[in-house]
Image (cartoon, rainbow, N blue to C red; front, side, top):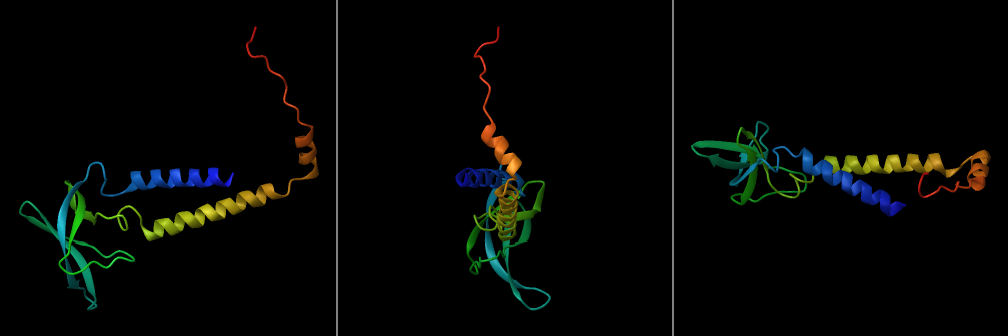
Length: 144
């Protein structure tokens, strides 16, 4: 039973990941960008990915949890042609897997699993007797 539930969770989470990425993986275009650190208003250095499409230049945030790109490194960027300002750095961690989604889905999975165990853990005496007395009726293979 546990294997089935875990497989079901992985299939559902994989479908969720594949169909909710923005910009869309299927319709998006991939180009290369260069990482540059830019100071923000508080004086912190933030990694930004700089890329160009035609004559237009775009800057996007390249900071992801547990990921610190090096100054001047080249990364892939995925964008939609209609909205290149909403581009994302194309990588496993940051585009496909995000920490908040992964943690949230695992917490939801554990909570719902514990609720299911609590509901089915201690059946009443009547339901136990009903389950023990159950005899499936014989069905004919073909109807007359």
